[in-house]
Image (cartoon, rainbow, N blue to C red):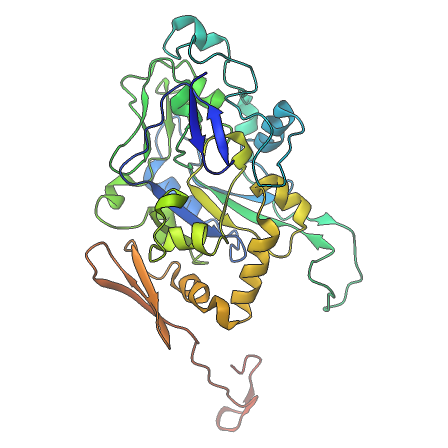
Amino acid sequence: MATVYNWQIGREMEYPYAENRPDRQWGAVFDLNKCIACQTCTLSCKTTWTHGEGQEHMFWNNVESKPYGAHPLGWDQEILDRLGVQEWGSDGVYDGDTIWEANDVDWEETSPTEEHIANEGYVEGYMPEDQDWAHPNLGEDEPAGEAFAGDTHIEGEEHPMWFFYLPRVCNHCTYAGCAGSCPVQAIYKRQQDGIVLIDEESCQAQLQCVQACPYKKSVFNQAKGNSQKCVGCYPKVEQGRVPQCFENCLGKIRQHGWVNPPEEADPTNPIDYLVHEAEVALPLYPQLGLEPNVYYIPPINVPDDYLYQMFGPGVEEAKATYRRARDGRAEERKLRGLLHLMGSTEWRIEEFEVTEDRAIGYDENGRTVAKVPMEEPRAERPKFEQGVDAYRLDVT
């Protein structure tokens, strides 16, 4: 069997191609505790990239309400049901099958470029129905959990009723389902930055990319007759800037940069710090085996069992670490400073430091591109203003 090492599942796994990591890997961290589902990211992407004919149903960036929302409909439930119940070992190693392993394909004897393979579904996946793409906001704001008395005070660490927002873009995976399944190799991963792109002129519309991507971020354009997907805003990335959806995020939940494997992690690199050093940001469904490069800080108001199946081991520790940073604990001061830097500049922060009173971000040339205070200045005003004979509801 052909094998590659996937550090997110802690073991080697089967894969159709030899391991070939890019020089640098496009990466991102989303803080789910701050997303308000304003959909500004969705609209900024829509008006920039998917406003053409045949793209009406495409949302390269979308925001879903979990646990009931999904675009396309039921994408996560569908692939998890196909894989069946899988287990993580106590050592953090994934014991189940990835999408590359579920169908027992001998990758040494099978080439994805063979014509007959295109119709055999050798990678575990499924093709959404056309109507599955039609309702991007289905399930929005629908809560889960038990009802509670309608007062304003909720006891305990977790809310008895909960939901959270999950913003999604292409994960530009290290072992991308779209690229690994394309029988004509029209999908490729750029060596300079790890962004996954589709050569639309080479695409023969065999739709294996749509079927194999478990996140359903490769989408078929029926008007043009080829597949299209998020391009990671590579024109902006090449200029040292953050992608469009990152720059326009009102909640400042997004951090863009480069992510390294654990053994090459740089603690001054924001993404590496969040993923490898603080271990507060986790991949989405790592058990699928794609080594996605978008990471999420789990929402602290959601039950651990739901988050465990979504982000894998480390959820409890990530939530505890985030709470310590939120509460101003001294041991998480560096993390707190980095969280303040998120969304503070249109330029990509490649190095950061936290001083006594502020957090500072630097670009690839060492230029200061962001500087934020560790504590926001506060001013308190009287509830009643004598000069204008008016009361204030917000005094701080």
